[in-house]
Amino acid sequence: LLPEQKNILKEFIVSANSSIRLRNIVNEEMIKLGKDISALKEKIAQIDAVNAKQFSGQSEKVNEELTALWDNWSNQEKIGGQTDIELNKKFIAKLKKVVKELDVDKKTLKEVQFKIEALVLQHDPDKLQQQLNEINATLNKLKGERAQLENNLEFFTDSSAENPLYKNVEKQIKSCQTKIDKAQEEYIRLKQIKNANQKLENQEKEALNENEETQESDAE
Image (cartoon, rainbow, N blue to C red):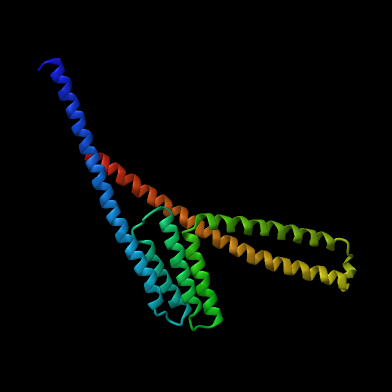
């Protein structure tokens, strides 16, 4: 072939390869779009199905049913972006509405609502971190108040144990300690949720890396 013919052939090959790559990209996007539409329909159907769900009247059983519902929801194909965020909000709102209308005692209702909140935080890291920051600030404030009250006791002598003011300070310390204990329990609960989230995130990253390595190996 002449030099000019060789150049033309090279340009044709480059153009043909570009066309093939473009076609492959279009095909991949069309497949993804089809999956997204299917996932959207399935998620909408699940949201609608929450109304028809018949929960039992026992706290432990309801929590198991809620977890199963949430796990099924979470295992659905992800669409991504704002769409998933809005769908999650609708699903959560529907769950809360149905649970609020359950014919159960107040204790059971509170436990179930507590369970829903935990499930929500597992899928909302920003809100989880915000609550952690708030409860940590509350703890620091309460501990400061307790320290100040304990310092106030030093102004009383040992013989002033029956003093009304002394008793009042003691009462305030006990009340403050009760608040600290409750806040500490909440902080531990939130930290456990965060640690579980991080563990799951690490597992997902490892699975993704393994998948990418497998694809690269197959491509070679």
